[in-house]
Image (cartoon, rainbow over all chains, first blue to last red; front, side, top):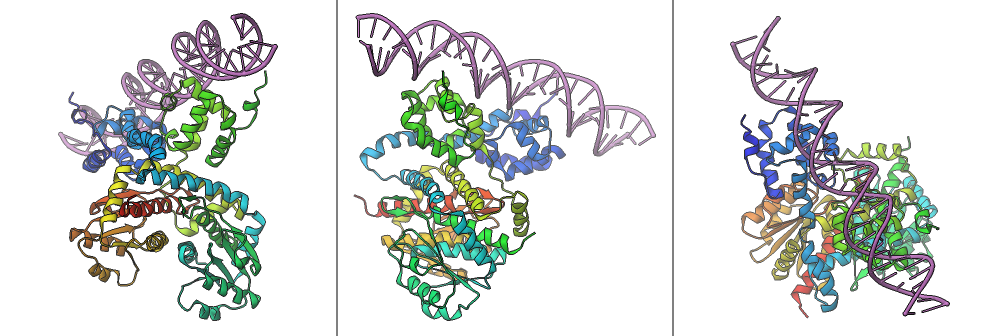
Length: 276
Length: 276
DNA sequence: CGCAGAACGGAATTTCTATTCCATTCTGGG
DNA sequence: CCCAGAATGGAATAGAAATTCCGTTCTGCG
């Protein structure tokens, strides 16, 4: 009885797992090949799944998945899984010390920054729920769904927010138009009754955006505004105001709350446009 | 004997865990407070660690960690862990299929969508910590800080990510150039040795971005790539690969992890360029 | 068509982990 | 300084998960 498979020694890191996977897949029997191909596409699931879950996801019996692990050179699932879990915890030790030291030393390691921004992101998302009312959101979504065209405007920091909305709307077949900076006021001429304007602007509020919003509101066209403060000058003329406050790290902000809000809004609009 | 703690019902998602954590930490006894504070900073470890590991990391006995879980309202560690293990599926149905999914799951109503995306945002941020290594990030940040010009490229969904980076770099006085879609290959001619390229692309990967990255890498210029999957074709030619996997809601994704990562990176680059 | 070897899936088994229990230690009030 | 109630850590237990075993099914070749 010669276990050729088991003779190979086990991969010692994720890279080797992938290489081994690619090397042996072809020679595997049907079920194990299933395991190989699903696993190859979903490596990240291994760290958090039980054998039975992986097996089920592959459409295979747990024992088959077991044999698959062994075909890769591991003694079993546990050994393979530990590789993927280690990858997650690997850099922790160094990180632990940093958490202790960095706060005091004030040193700015990239990892520390990432942790801070991540933390800020959590806080922003938590805050989001409390500053937005479902009713307001629903009204905006319905209004956008009924509109001929949704016009999007946002400059500087707000630009990446509206550009992501524009992308989603485009993918979803919702008629939307993204307005860019230069000569934006003229763009107002392309906005007609039946349309709506969604303006995003953060303090300090960009003049062009504010001016466009006001000129549109005066014409009786609905204007919705996403901002970070009640003091936003668009507030006066907007039909609805959305406030997404971002937590900051040393004066810098990521856009977690805003993007989460606009993504949800865009999807809602699409859903409302095509009932059933 | 009144178990006030145990009376509360368990959090049902990550958002609630964080809120509960922040709410009760103060009132916890010493050991459990240790658990709370470590856990709060290391949420991502829960998914891949055993109780004994978490306990050790907190400097606490397993039974104490157990009590901590219960103080949060869970029946035990297993219940809490299952919240953090909820999977990020790689499966991406076509857009219209996604909407059908949304309708079936009853996740309609804009408010509900917002809550779902917010929850997904929390999970994405938690996952971020586990897919990125400090060392890789540091190398990228240093490389960008040393570069003559940082070139940014990303199309479609990735565009809002690079455009926000471009904005931050601009604000911070870091020389950066954002490349747009049309005729992008020609843009390669404006990239020289001493520069670096930061490419962002998500599955399905946009050809232009991949082609540009490859053509630049061939010339020996460092290419860094932010993507959502190990399968990204740029991986082969990139000096460093960053993976930010976004949790999805019925097939739709917000960009929390990506933006948090790129924002932190941009700030780090600036910090490295001007120490002190 | 039948046979041999491989592949398979389900059930039995073993190993390991989460959870509970309890004796001991700690803390704060009198 | 002592006592009562809470908190703690370690050992015992219950439970679940990984792994193995084995009878059955499948595949390819004679």
